[in-house]
Amino acid sequence: MSVNRPRHGLHLLAPLQVAADFPILSRHVNGRRLAYLDSGASTQRPRAVIDAVDHYETHLHANVHRGVHSLSQLATDAYEGARERVRRFLNAASTREIVFVRGTTEAINLVAQTWGRGNIGPDDEIIVSALEHHANLVPWQMLAAATGARLRVIPIDEYGQIRFEAYQALLNDRTRLVAITHVSNALGTIVPLRRIIEAAHHVGVPVLVDGAQAVAHAQVDVRALDCDFYCFSGHKLYAPTGIGVLYARESLLQAMPPWQGGGDMIRTVTYERSTWNDLPYKFEAGTPNISGAIGLAAAMDYVEGLGLPQVAAHEHELLTAATAALMRIPGVHIHGTAAEKAAILSFTLKGVHPHDLGTVLDHEGVAIRAGHHCAMPLMDLLGLPATARASFGCYNTLEDVEQLETAVRKAAEVFR
Amino acid sequence: MQLTDLYREVILDHNRHPRNFGRLDPHDAEAKGHNPLCGDQLTVTVCREGDRLSDLRFEGNGCAISVASASMMSEAVKGLDLPAVDALFQRIHALLTEPAASSEGLGKLAALSGVREFPARVKCASLCWHTLNAALAQTDTTAATVSTE
Image 1 (cartoon, rainbow over the protein chains, first blue to last red):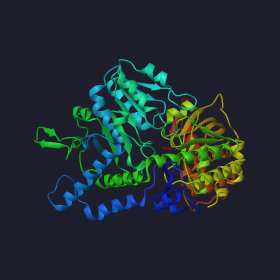
Image 2: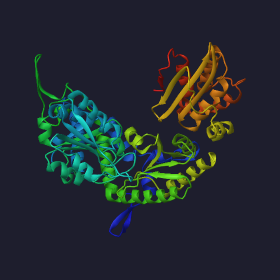
Image 3: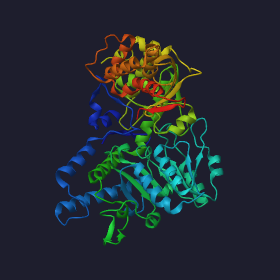
């Protein structure tokens, strides 16, 4: 276990040992030590996840929920074991509330196309925030276009924080859903979900949370949050791509029609009609991403082994150091300075386009994201075509922060 | 692969001081270019005298590669006949994508040869050329739009 002795009652992460758990981090990029600061886009995988997937592929694979043969049973046990692991991770009441999907995007589309089509009609309103990723905006726009509903957008203040009073004013008797991010992928803002959910529930409105940027950085307890839907992707939680989770209250899932039809989601089929399988299988048509689910379970074991509070404390330390380091550089402007912020640092350097910054940093071995971060309306609101974004994970170190600072200084020099 | 292969002095200079920057009004045609991947936006306005590209300007915002490429393009094509503009477009396209392409006789534009070592940046350099092409293909003054995606 990569932790140090307890100090102030909290085990501190030993960042170098954590980094050593991730094979890819030992490689070089463009002849430089890799400083991977793009975990907001996708995290890397620890050896434990790579091994778990490898073990499954080597020893256990067959289709799930089908065969009477031993391998099928082993694969089913592993897959359903992963579902139970996810339930514990989120503290959901039942595995019937855990639907495996491709990722956050698919989870949100599933809700929009099933729950949404059944519960949202002409002149109804869906509340989103100005911080949303396209994944939590476009599916609702599509639903609104199909049903005649309207999107209402919660504004943000100059620090990138939700304007809570404006949100309260938007809630009305036409509101059918609040769909909101947990953590802004572009600015790092942590949204005050409990207050948001409480206010929505007060007027009988359910809340969907886009948790893509949150699950790797804080303990999520869906029952404590009291959210109705919670969506996230495995690949932002140290797991493989192509696996994600939709959590939804059992009562909502029961009432929702299936989304995709096919094998596994049915109980009986005749040429004329079909009846649906129990939860959560009603929403898992076709052979699922079995190895992805197993990788996700291993990733949850891994991060909970480190301790999510420890990961959060470590990342906060990196954020503080990186913020101070960048602010020392003349011409750097940091976008998003919310009081409650995850380890995401969006910035620009005067006179240097973020793409040029990205190229110079890449040349120095520093991987960051440069662009609109799939949040074009937010970029328009900020009056920026793009920003550079450094985002941190459990494996980052102060050495990564130093390498970032040096590389940004280099960019300033090239474009002087 | 060196950074200075990409950010050559002539490119940095054109980025700092873009030539033919702005709009031509009146103009014979206008086209907008957009790279949705990075948000680069470019508008090219052109004036023609028969088969000759008599004048052009560009405006917008983008990275150093896209601004410098547009600036150098504007200098290179101004006054050329349309077939010559097209021939130059073909040569630049080859320069940006084909390892064996020659930069001989291209003058300043040869500085773009470093871009092909940075595949993520090829679209930045080619956006202005596609936008110019769209403007020259215009038969009326309603703006055409091209996208790199």
